[in-house]
Length: 178
Image (cartoon, rainbow, N blue to C red; front, side, top):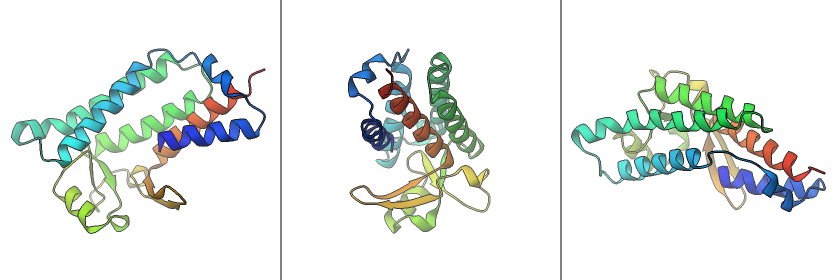
């Protein structure tokens, strides 16, 4: 939901008198860090779902997934003084905690999934897993479900919501600079 959050933040920024041009004033240092982390997570998830990883390579998927968060923490630390970074850091920490505590997989509420997705997660494909009674930090898992017009079903975590709120704060405050 990152792109949706940026779009919503820009809309709210405009409605509150902000200027899109002000976004050029955001001095995000080391922007390659989250881009690399998200690319890595996307490749892991996509490749895992396609069954590309097998044997010992499959066992590295959760380790690499957890390690990708180091790049996100580095980025947040580098940009700590920017508005919204504290919410972004807290959200990243929540997601990291639940993923690390559950063997490198983000638990997902199976009641909110279709049969195909549930079977894929049960098979250990991708970077997510099924939420079970043995899952740790269940409150931080992907358990929040909403259905949005145009976007359809969205399943996310408290960490995702905090990350999105950090993005909202950063974009709106920057757009409203005088």
